[in-house]
Amino acid sequence: MDYKELMAEALKARKYSYSPYSNFCVGAALLCKNGKVYKGCNIENAAYTPSNCAERTAIFKAVSEGERDFEAIAIVGGKKGECGDFCAPCGVCRQVIAEFCGKDFKIILGNADKIEEYTLETLLPLAFTNKNLQ
Image (cartoon, rainbow, N blue to C red):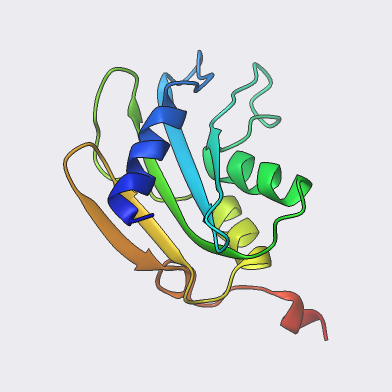
């Protein structure tokens, strides 16, 4: 699957966003090395802190089904009904990505018109990982 197709899957996932408080809808599509794709959307909560980002939803779905080898994640987000600017993962999501992926893991940001490719190391240069605990 190429990254344009992966972004299309993220756009589909965005439609399921539950974001009644912020009206900021995010979709993510996680590509496993075996070709399987897990989609996620952001899910808000009235108490705010129990909310979950689209990236973590996709990763947790994949991990909960035994997947551990990931190639890339596509992320798209913006105000409901709008195709906004690029939506980079938050710090918590970057840390979760670092738990399961190497520094060369691809993070694809985009919208309906264009995409850009980043590595985890670019977005989280001094990641705290299991190596720090040894």
